[in-house]
Amino acid sequence: MSQHTQPEPAQPSIAEANRAVLGRFPFEDTRDFEDARRGFLGTAAEPLVEDADGRTVWDLEAYGFLAEDCPDSVNPSLWRQSRLVSDHGLFEVVEGIYQVRGFDLSNMTIVEGERGVLVVDPLISAQTAAAGLALYRAHRGERPVTAVLYTHSHIDHFGGVRGVVPDGAEVPVLAPEGFLEHAVSENVYAGTAMGRRAAYMYGAALPKGPRGQVGAGLGQTTSTGAAGLIPPTLDITRTGQEEVVDGIRMVFQLTPGTEAPAELNIFFPDHAALCMAENATHNLHNLLTLRGAQVRDPHVWSRYLTEAITLFGDRTDVAFASHHWPTWGRERVIAFLSEQRDLYGYLHDQTLRMLNTGLTGPEIAERMQVPPALEKAWHTHGYYGSVSHNTKAIYQRYLGWFDGNPAHLWQHPPVEAATRYVDFMGGAEQVLAKARESFADGDYRWVAEVVNHVVFADPDNADARALQAATLEQLGYGSENGTWRNFYLTGALELRDGNVGTPTATVSPDLLAALTLDQLFDSLAIRIDGPGSWDASLAIRWNLTGHREPITLRLHNGVLTHTAGQGPAVAAPDLTATLDEADLRAVLLGTTTLDQLAADGRAHLTGDPHTVTELLGHLTAPDPGFAIVTP
Image (cartoon, rainbow, N blue to C red; front, side):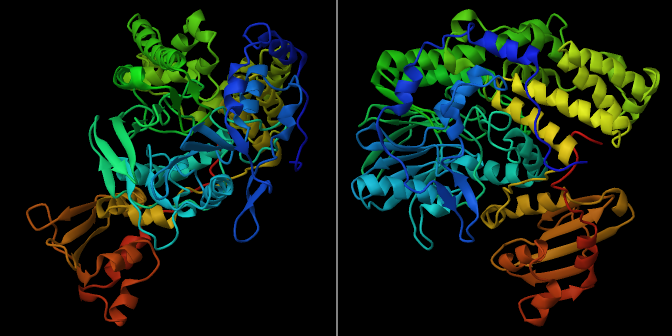
């Protein structure tokens, strides 16, 4: 394979389809551009945000090409959204509330208090968060950070906290109930697979430009600096809960199960300002993000938006979120929240209506049409989520992967099915010849499906890889959804130039340290080589200093279980170890050994010390570079 293959131009059919978008939507409506620039105070003089080693983790000028007219290789609607989202700097929402926008995938909000500032959602990386705080201080003065608030459990809303809270400083950290459990479990349990797929979703390896990455709809891309976590010190446990931090009054609305398993909205009564976290942004959001996650509930999402209007609508003069730009004016705020509410409610209700007539997820996705009144509102467009994959997610939430057709109950896996398909269709040469005819006709969806079989049947077939790459590229050029575009173009990149792996890692020392012991043991159980440990049978009892009950780890039948206390479910131990919890964590994470701790007098062992070695030998390592567009 050649390296750094140049992207091909848009085919005439894609260019024509993109031009047609200009007549379909109200591009003459410029209110979003006015709102996105309102309150601009300035931006950083230095465009590069770097880490301690001089590596660039964010480039404020990377999307300067968006100032040009939309080329035929980008959907004009996505180009418009990316231009809006790439605007960067410090913005005044209202007096006393400021946002740093365009310094990461998300926004960082800064609320001024009596002694310092409350930082809401400190971005992904310490470096970008620190740069954002420095920009604020350059315009508003050297106010200390007196509190931090996480609106929800996704890493782009807490990962940069070490950049705004100095080492050793103690400030209150507020978060919704359940935040810590979900923040660490999502990034550890399935973190490797999510991270690999996120490389596709955000197009991290793509060149930025008209034939490459132009954004992700919700934000431009993810920063690549150091992610951390400071655990919350104050949980928000109920809607209506009020807190005052540094003189800042806040009223909270809990919204679990919406955009995140643990999430909240915040009303600032002294500012008549409503923070909607990520529950109401200027696009259709994901019900099932393409990187993978638990399916979100559009029904409760819609109901919580109604509740927000009921609780705060008649007192709110501005609504802002942790992505995109604010909406000002009470009537406009209520209209914006109502349209967002109707959008999620409509997708939910109509999907259920159609699945109860026997339609499957893909069939419903093809038939689903958003009401014209909603489609005219730019903030309902599928730049990040999409009507197509959200509809399939709702089907999955209610009925699962199986569509009821017994022919789909026990299908061959991809490689075996592909080999048979290609053989049935007359061999690879015949398939590619017909696929090239379909490509010339502009039937790219069909080409992608058919040629994928040839690639999976024979991944070394250079002609198949080239045709599939060209096809995915054209599908990307036509996508209004930023993450679809990134998936298609990254697939083309890997077919041409090879595996890009996972450019960013979300599992940091802070996240590992925040795991409870239950979560730590569970994260080990996920890594056990089941077939390789069928015949293994071992048990280790951990007596932890300061813990009332011992914990017994048992590997039996290929399953690693852990049980507290002593009883009929607890196996007799092959090894008993007495040590501190911190030392146990170090052993299980591989930063020290039990033998070393015993030699240092920090662990007392009874039984066979090789039991731990045997247990760790049954662990497998995840693969952050697994194949996606090839077998």
